[in-house]
Length: 219
Image 1 (tube, rainbow, N blue to C red):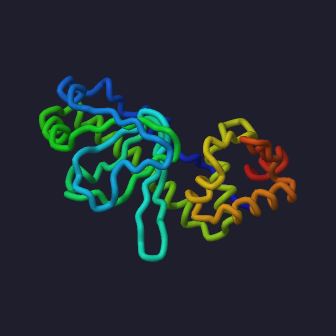
Image 2 (image 1 turned 60 degrees about the vertical axis):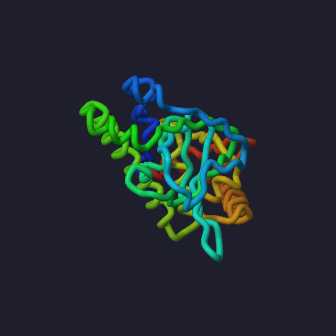
């Protein structure tokens, strides 16, 4: 039995850093990029030019090794990425749109200069990064669970609205499998097993936990 008393807190739940609250010089400098599904925004090793926010859609951050593609995590509306571009000359990963998306690019040097001049922006960005770090830490903790079954259960529990039994799936199963470091067929087998065990029931885009199982979870 997996125990989980703390839900994943993503920075979009705590109030994302809003672009329209940026100083005017930053608002004038930003550019927006429309992206099709599977389009690459930038690739690992390319020179850094900007940091980014997701206006809508979802993108994944990946790295390539000789053996495989490593998916780090995904970002959604209100979340930032490529923050290390502020202090590094090359991007450390490749960013790919998982669905039609729009991203906002903020030129790195202008952002850095404004950070140094604006205490309010500096405090806001520090808070934003703290929440971002917490979300990524929770994600890494999820990945560290050795049992694939418990990893999947933890993932679903973290996304269950408080006081409710149903989790709405906002992405395809293959994207969830990537996030959980599972093969898509392994994820499908695990879901079928959980349903056969009476822990969940499945519909097209949602999963509902057994009320009895949830009650046992909190004991």
